[in-house]
Length: 107
Length: 121
Image (cartoon, rainbow over all chains, first blue to last red; front, side, top):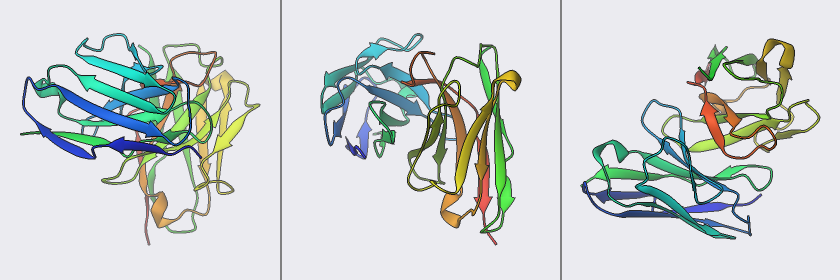
């Protein structure tokens, strides 16, 4: 199974900060990666698909990059509603595997 | 409105069985692969199982293989997860999820609200 190593596991940031979260795959997965946001008690929400494509309705402050084994989710200017946990998910092969999650907290 | 609604969760004893359902509405269900994802209390997301549109291809996480069975009824716009030999570590919120494209099982853009399964004596 492909392992997805996500970092950091948590971070503290202020409104307006630029935030970067990374996911590293244990083998190449082309660009078959999505990023999800999850708030407490809610289902995950798709932010980015195919590593860098913005899902419809998602603010443009979210962006994704990378290909192969290294991927990045960037929030250009953190907003109060962005405090949540973020996950990457590879859809290159089975079993599908998620990163461990990154909790973004208020500094 | 495109929607997935899970049901069937509850409290079950170790070794017991439970069948989860996911009712789809607001879109044509039959062309889409479908998925189950779970989340144990306070933990991260874990993919559980996937099924192709016509049930020809089925995949399971190692943690549930041999105990869980995914199925679907396209006539009823429904997805199912039969869970047998349940263990305490199966305690989780179970989500059904749909990929954004009907032609592949890529990123999951539609999720249900989740149904809680608690395995405890």
